[in-house]
Length: 218
Image 1 (cartoon, one colour):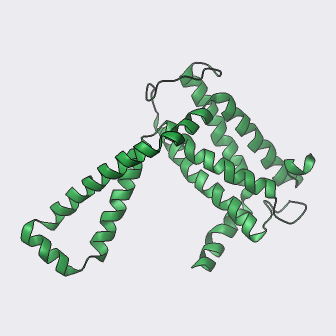
Image 2 (cartoon, one colour):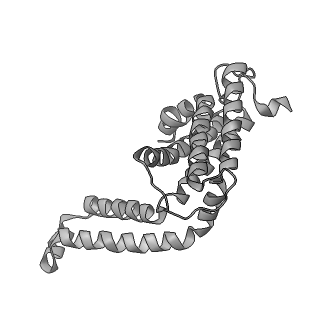
Image 3 (tube, helix red, strand yellow):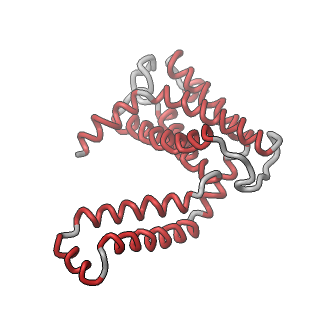
């Protein structure tokens, strides 16, 4: 299983580390422009939650940011674990610790960024409830269904169970997610988004075209 994860996921993602930096640059540039527009100013720090129109494109970008964040983390981890250079042009032919660390850190920030725009607690509750109910439906033996049918229809039981799990997990997540929300609001400030975008474009260009890392220039 570990070998399959290495061959199918970690190594291929690590080989595209340079391209992931450019993708991060595009995403954070759009984040910066969008945040500046909805705040009315690049420097304005305050914005009312959900007091803006969210287009389908930006909704898609938000979910894409979560996916890209996860892939960047895996790319950075894969490079460090298996000593994989971030691009074919990379001169040393070995892993760039600076690039891999940047991908992991920025991947985490990119994953956290949508928390300022999405009801994350509800999403976590929905995913958890769906996963638990689906697993129970698959693994429970037929005898359990026979016992359930004596008292209540099995479908009704699982629907009720779904909403109970959803409510418990969503409320718990909302309670513990406050700290992450604060981080999300900080990195949603447009100047920070533009700085991150600029770094990603420069580092991505150096890695893919020049074959060096910013970390080697200083």
